[in-house]
Length: 188
Image (cartoon, rainbow, N blue to C red; front, side, top):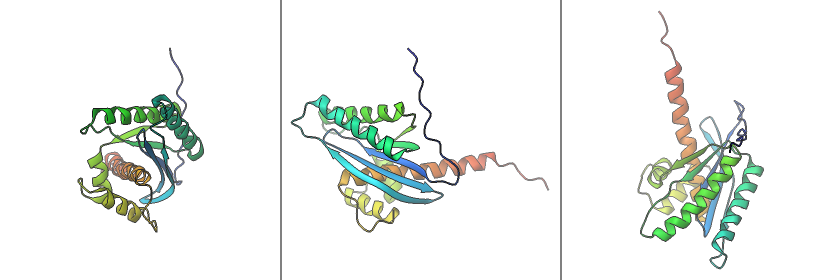
């Protein structure tokens, strides 16, 4: 079967690039939206969806999918950035996070939004300059980098903003590299 993928929202030069960051989880999924214009980043919106362990696993994933779809429709992001799956001590927890990640990725892909993945240490390095920073350091630097008056809460929403910041920073590096590659030497 072949299905057409919708075109992503078009980013017009001179307007902010909107990035949706997602910190996936079955119990709590953080969402954060950041606009980037040049090197300036502005927080647009952030929140966290929590589900109850008393809900059936499929029902929890449906709620995550519905929330993601509503956010995509309302915020119209140009890109989505999500944390890569981390296999820690619990395979069961990794599987649950993987399911939530998959749901969020599919919703964005269906909307034609490019999906980018970053590992935990890359996110910490991009936000704090230290790949092993603790959660409080990350939250404090999210506040600082986005010019917020308070640390964003809950922490899953702050993590989602950190993921969006990571993508915004990596895009800046890509744009500068592309400009450097396309320049031709001047003749004298």
